[in-house]
Image (cartoon, rainbow over all chains, first blue to last red; front, side):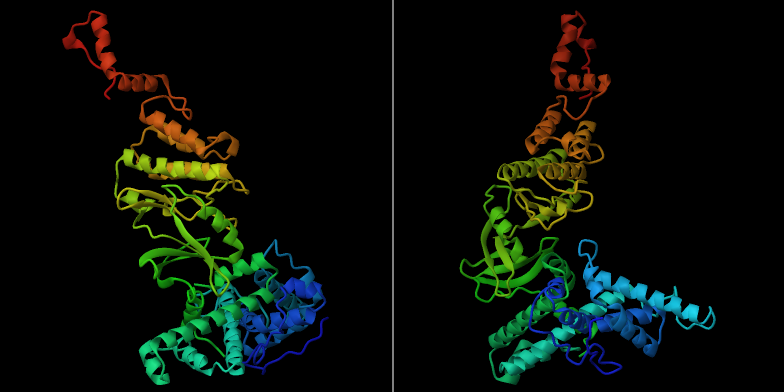
Length: 238
Length: 276
């Protein structure tokens, strides 16, 4: 098994506090083939820990702790080098391949638990009913994948801005694009920061362009090559 | 950090917007999207006119240049191709004001007008095919009928486009004959319920699942439509004898009117062979 260190606190900061990617921008399969499988694994964990956790909770009706244990189990035992070698991009995207592997893993865990307890009081049982959401577990998995993809890219954008003296661009981006309620107008932001409205829109355009690049790079690192990258990007952008 | 659904959707949207800094264009609004990319309305600051701006993956930029070289009255003219700072390719084209073919047909134009649109589309296809380009995604939404009756075929395909169900030929590898299939589907789409069976037969032949059984090219299909309009027999249909007689009568009503005269029938009893 590939060795790695699971990051993040045991509850909400799943997947690591920053999910920092190595600087290389090799595709997933290239990273595995060129002898840096740990790095490929890090990328996968950073992006998929939370979607897998949420998928397991919904698909199999597991509570927080059980879902975390299963997620941890998947990433520590199922995700070995063979996992990447067996991946055939001609059959499915890596995201679909991974989700199906999670399902197989969870069901095998259930079967093992059933054997161990002779069919007795087994907690883990796939349920047909869904959680109180209009979305299927598969849809939630995709949604969480997108959420994590952007969350990691925003973290990286912050780090980039801090490191390169782009605090003003970051503040404008946070005030406008990360606003959860009503957004301030460009004019308000211009007054607030003592710059012109054009400068506000230019800073926003820079931040968005940078964010787009960061998202693209993360996708490149977790897909098999240009074709899959293109298809995944079409799913990401609205 | 955890992003709410609304922030996530906002980011997915704004991060996809084209960064037009360094270009002569100013973004106005999104006007459409398809398998090949997103189209925006934009203003060309230098020429002070509105254009349609289509964004593509850079990998598709080469084929966009091929499309840009297709100069034909029924193909939307491309003004410029270029690259954005974020690495995406774009091309600027004429912003056509009008309706898609689906909207045009909803206005219940005459059969002749509908067939006129198909003729223009077919001519554009023939032109492109002769230059090695194929459309790959011909469908009503990709045919614009302008305010002055002009017809434009839009969204010329690139390799990534897989076609649209109902208009896409069944073969896995699309070629010029796949465009003939789509042209047949387009013909079937515009035909009203009262259309002559010969026209439906033409559409059916163009849409034959076997590419070799379709019309060999767009001009052959258009020629059959023209024959149908002129009351001549069409390649696609083996019509029953009574239908042939009626068609003959319709084409030769005057002659038919004269035949009884040669046979000594009184003029007052003469009737044309067809109701016309």
